Length: 276
Image (cartoon, rainbow, N blue to C red):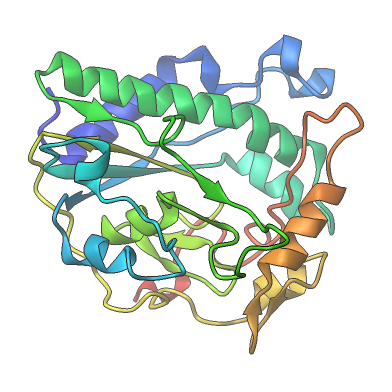
C-alpha cells in the first residue's frame, strides 16, 4: 500500500524492473542493436500538498503557464500531488553525450520511452485506486492543453501548458531549474517527469531550496552543448530557437525527434552540482 514518497519510489522501481515497456521493443527499434536497451533507471519521487502555496503561485507565473490548473481542478477533493523523475540510463545518456548533435538512441528513448512513462504513471494511479483513493494523471488527460505560438496570439502563453510537469516537480521538492530550463534533480536533469493528483494525503516533501534556480551553478555547459544556440548565459533560453531546431531533427518517417544535448555531457546530467 502506498502511504509515502518512499512507498511510491519502491512501487515505481519494481514496476520498471518488471515492465517490458522499460526497454526498446524489437518491433520499434530504430536500429536492430537498440532492441532490449533499457530506458530508465530507478526513479525518485516527491510530493506536494494540493493546496501548497508554491502551486498557487505557479498559476500566476507565466514561466509555468498563465492557465495552470490547480490540483482540485483536475480532481475535486484532491489532497496531494505525487511527482516522480525517471532518469535515463547511462547507455542512453552517454550515447548522446558523445555526439555534438542528437543521436538516434536518444530520440528512441525520448519517443518510445514516453510510452513507458505513460504506462508507469498510469500504473501508479491504478495502484492508488486499488488502495481506495481517487487518482488522476494529467499526462494524456483530455484537459491537458499545450500553448504553441499562433500568428494573432500574444507571445506570453506560447510554449506553456496548463500542467507543467517540471514546475510540479519543483513544488514537490524534486529539484530546481537550470539555465536550459530543465529541472535539476539529485539524479540530474536527463530524464522524464510525470505526476498523479490524488485524494490520498501524503506527507509533503521538504524543499531543500527557496529559489527557482538554486541547484544550477550557471556554469554555461548546457549553452556550449546546444547545437542551435538557443541558450545564452545572459539572455537565458529561446524557446522559439529550440523548437525550430527540434522540428529539424524529425526523422524521415516522422516518428522520431528530440535533442537533449543540454542534458547530456554536462555537470548536471546525472547529479545536482549546486545542491550543496
